[in-house]
Length: 428
Ligand code: MN
Image 1 (tube, rainbow, N blue to C red):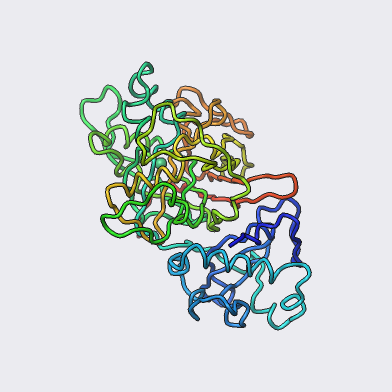
Image 2: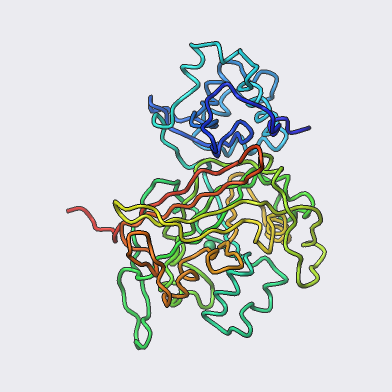
C-alpha cells in the first residue's frame, strides 16, 4: 500500500504557519486532554489539534477496520497493536479529510467544532503506556568520548562495542511528557579523594540528547525478529531526554550498569512521528568498521536525517543553543537494535520504548550531553546571559527540538521541554 499521506504537493484547508514541524505530510499521533476534560487520541496539522475519537464517531474512518473505541483511549497502545497496515490507512485517510480540495469537514461547521482544537485548549499527555524501556549506547562518538574521559583514550571503545548494539533495561515508570518538571535527585556519591561515600543532592545533573522509537507487538517469547522485518514493527519516534546524574552514575555503575543515576526521569516529546512520515528522509548508516554477524547485517537506507538541537534556558532568561547534532550519526540503526534485542527470543510489546543512546556528532559543538560539551566539567559552556554551565542548574529548562528538511517541506517533532526543580521537599 502506498503512503499517499506523504505526497509533498498536498495542501490543506487548515492554516499551517510557515516552517511548521507539522505540515499535512506529517500527521503524527498523540494523546491529549480537551477543554472538556475528555482524554482522546489525536493528530496535529499546523497549530490545530484534531480529535480522532470525534472524527471516528462522525464516520470519517468508514471502510477502515477499526473498533468503535480505538481512539477514545488514554494511550495509543491498542491502535499501535493494530499494525502497520492500519496506521497507513488511517494516515492516508486523515490526509484526504484535510486535503484542500475536500469540502466534507471543511464546510461542516458543526463537525469542525467538535473535531478541531487550538493548542491552548488541550493538554498533551504521555502518548503510550510504556511497558518496557530499553536504552542503547549506539553513538560511536559518544561512546568514544565517555571511554576517553573515564577509562583509557587509547582503548576508548570496549572490545564488544563494534560488534553489539550495547544497551540496558531502563525503567518506564519515570518517563514523562514534555512540560512536566522534574526534581534534582539525591543519592550516594563518592567525591574524589574521599574515603567514604556521602549522601546529598546530585551535583552533576545532565541531559542526554536521544531519540526513542516505539514498537508494536512484534514477536512471541522465543522468537527473534529478523533484521529485514524489524522496521515493520516500529510505529514511530519521539525526542527523548534521558536525564542523568553523572556523580551518582560514576559511583554506582560497576558492575551492573546504570541504576539510580538514570531512572529518576526521562522526558519525551508528546507527538509520535511515524516511521512512514520519515520515509523521505532515509540515509545510509555509517559503514560498519568490523564485519558484523549475519543477524546484524542491513542493506539499504536504514538511518534517518533528523537535525537535532539542545537549548538551555535559565529561569526568566532566554534560550541558548548548546548543541546541534543529527540522528544520522548513530553507528547502530534501529533495525539492528531491534534485531539484536530479540535475537535471544525476548518479546517486544506494543508501546515499548527504545532509546537510541546519546547522539553525539563528530565535532565538539555536536556533543549530546553536558558531560561531553563541558568535558566532564573542565570547559564551562557560556550562555547568552553571560553565565556558564558545566552541568544543569536548578530552575534551568532544557529544550530539545528536531526536524527533517526537504526543499518543499519539513517534518518535525516539536519539542521536549523540561524544567529542573530543586530537590524535592515534603510540604509541611
Ligand atoms: Mn541514555
